[in-house]
Amino acid sequence: MPQQKALIIGAGIAGIATAIRLAVKGYAVEVFEANSYAGGKLSEFEQQDYRFDAGPSLFTMPQYVDDLFRLAGKKPEDYFTYQKLDVVCHYFYPDGTHLKAYADEQQFAEEVKAKTGEPAIFTHKYYRNSSRIYDITNHVFLEQSLHRLQTYLSSKTLKSILRLFQIDAFRTMHQANRSFFKDKRLVQYFDRYATYNGSNPYKAPATLNVIPHLEQHFGAYFPDGGMYSITSSLVRLAQDLGVIFHYNSPVDEIVVQGKKVEGLMVKGDLHLADVVVSNMDVWFTYRKLLSGHPQLFPENILSQERSSSALIFYWGINKQFPQLDLHNIFFSANYEAEFKAIWNEKAIYHDPTVYLNISSKYQTNDAPPCCENWFTMINVPANTGQDWDTLIAEARQNIVQKLSAQLGEEIVPLIINESILDPRSIESRTSSYQGSLYGTSSNSQFAAFLRHANRSATISNLYFCGGSVHPGGGIPLALLSAKIVSEWVV
Ligand code: FAD
Image (cartoon, rainbow, N blue to C red; front, top):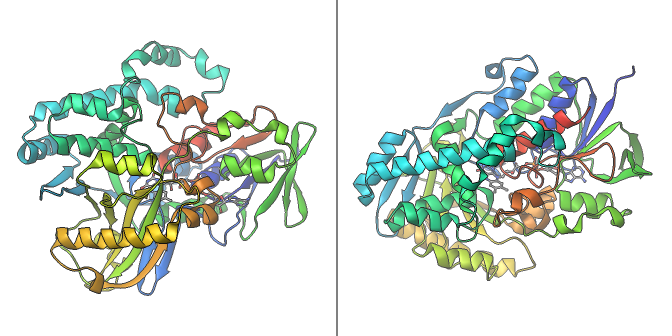
């Protein structure tokens, strides 16, 4: 039988992972990428003598990356290495509290007790709840397709379904967090996990309180070489397996004959395929690549609320700050008002929570000696046509004021180079509708069911991977989408 051909639209992390999995299955795989580089959001760039990871900075669930090397019969450490963080993140509160999120649960519970007075037993109880939600949901909601009958026929799934009443779907994350802790700082700490998939803790179901378990139990890591080494090592693996990457090659159309995919149109050429997998945001996949088939658009799915976006200032800083680490959070004084501004007013709050990532703390050559590379990010609404230039100018001023006050030093004179990423540029660089970081939001109990499936219900041999489809955004879930696609493709 001749070798089957799979064509993949986009070299985002899910597109690369799908390419690897299909190559291992015996497909001849080609990836068409619009940009001149791989990785999509998970890319890097240099700014004078500073290197920056452009997008993701927090690395969790490294086993999903390792799995790909093992699947291909390779040793992960020959391609990709990483180290576990002892302190996941440093939290700075407006009242001067500095909370260290130790990776070790007991140590963290003691830190919480020392800094907030909350008894350690409450912290342990919280993580037990988080772990229980994981045990129930992981198998059903993350590792398999929700859109395949087979999923519901296994006894493991049925057992999970019988326990679904225990996943706390009818309270918000914030309500649940308040029921665990009295201290507002700790509630804010746990509410923040909603932002891990671009959601709002005052709306998102408490089921998302599973996220702290993922970070605490499985840990947070720093990939040697920086986040981009996830992309570069997987591209190397894919190439070793014979996958062909075509850069600067935007796909213009998914060619459909009858109700079957025939191939792709790229720069005027038709490329025939047995299987097509789109790693392009599903919203744009339909509107741009399948524009001739509007009757096939799943409008109820495409109209779901998008996740939040981000505004990032990449600053080359000519000083080092020993009180800072790899991950640092400077909280706002009023978290609820901040989320109201983002979600209700579609604006940027005047006192935003600032996330500061400094990869040069671990990868010292990411900045010149005695300097640091600051990835300074705030959560902002998805792009619905706001006056971004004005919002960005105001936000920059508020951020530098906040950081200067918290660090006790004027930071503007220390910024020696700068570039900016905002919802518009996220949208244009990666074709992510409205510049959302994580596809659709998880602000409702039904979000998981209303995320697009990994296979088209109407066009045969058309599949979808990446953060805009099931099981959702973020590197771990994007990698799981690739696994689900490859298990579905025959
Ligand atoms: P994307 O990265 O969206 O890439 C899609 C690719 O498809 C792009 O390369 C694009 O050019 C290409 N493409 C699109 N259309 C076409 C076309 N027509 N033809 C050819 N190619 C096309 N996740 C975490 O786990 N941890 C974090 O700390 C984290 N922080 C983040 C911070 C930021 C600023 C951003 C932007 C994202 C962050 N995320 C984080 C989310 C994470 O980056 C994404 O969920 C994940 O990288 C999405 O991968 P993807 O495979 O869906 O594709």
